[in-house]
Image (tube, rainbow, N blue to C red; front, side):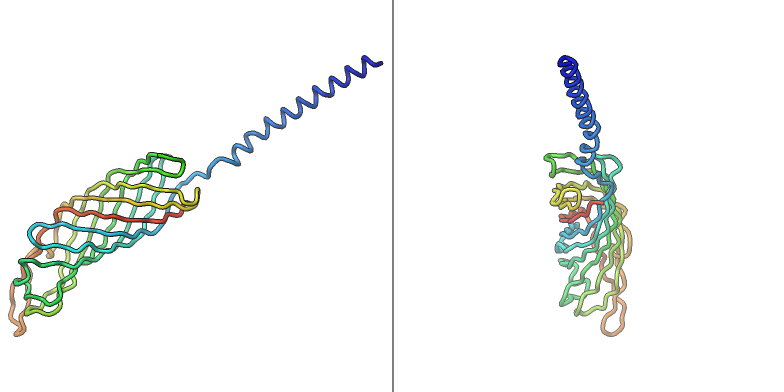
Length: 233
């Protein structure tokens, strides 16, 4: 009887160990799934920064404060596609065009709206820190606010161009899975510049006589520096 009792005890211990091991193995995938990070499918957030423009000749543009917003969709875990819209305004230093535009007391300004798209492969450096960069293309439409004062009354001018560049940036997950902070740099080259912004237009003197006001030189390059706070969706 003592031998039978020992046998039953051994069987009980073995059965208990097997059941415990089975329960642990069953619970491992569930716990692993609970710890897995939430996959990010898209991002949405505001952008603010500075845009600068360079042009031919001695006409120059003050760097302007830009603001807008963006959305980025992750088509692959390491590949995002960004769409961005923003607005910026620049004061214009007329240089040698000042006399042609009636020597205004306050310079004209140019306001621009931009739609930009970029393809951005991402490279993780640390669990919460990544670099990204890739080609970008944008369409920009702009118009002038006529100058104040001077001997000529100038009309509003408009223009547009397409620009190709590179969008480079760094991102940091301030609140993992929820909030990401980004800084990016976007140099670009404009092509297809068109509109009466670049051509001589009519102006009027105080007596109503018609004069010719010179066109603005074409842009040679642009750049933007921007910061953004992004909500992870």
